[in-house]
Image (cartoon, rainbow, N blue to C red; front, side, top):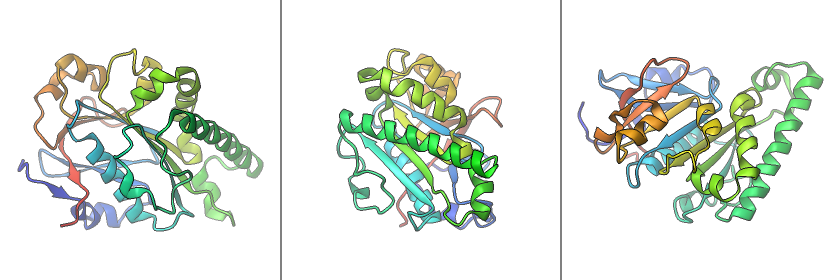
Length: 259
């Protein structure tokens, strides 16, 4: 497939996008046959994005944010919590009305955010139980005060897991296992794929994986259980979805520019 940059407008103009059933659809990119590969957050609670430094992870994150914003102009339907340990990756999003907190770049604030999110998690379950609704989508069909989807987005998950594992590990696992029912999702990147940085229980509960170029086949195997990410070119990725793929698909990803 042609390796030139592919803008998100191709996704926004596609039949699949125009006929979408909800406003939390994401295209991973195009496969080797030129077909769109779609990820519906209605079916997954999170995405783990791995790869060596400067391989395209942050660009992919920004494509996700741009795609979700395109579908949700109002903060009444979509909210973000953005964690940026590098302190410069999300600057362009600092004025978004969709932010629950100002962009987070300190561990202490990250702890406050995940504790708040856990409380919101419990609050939403209580609401659904009270209204006898199975999930947020059924609740929002009839509710006067609809619940927005919340995306907890982390640029370098390993920093959180290494510095405060007791705070983040169990909360992440809980959200990843059942968060989609209440409209709470986690998207995270990492360039550090060993178990010391990404605990196995956290890794396996990300049912959707995206892997850019890795330094070795071993690093690739830790994320998508397939060693060939080490051979990827710029803009290419491997996509693994627990629900639909037996082995990772090779994809050419988008970029967020609309030029």
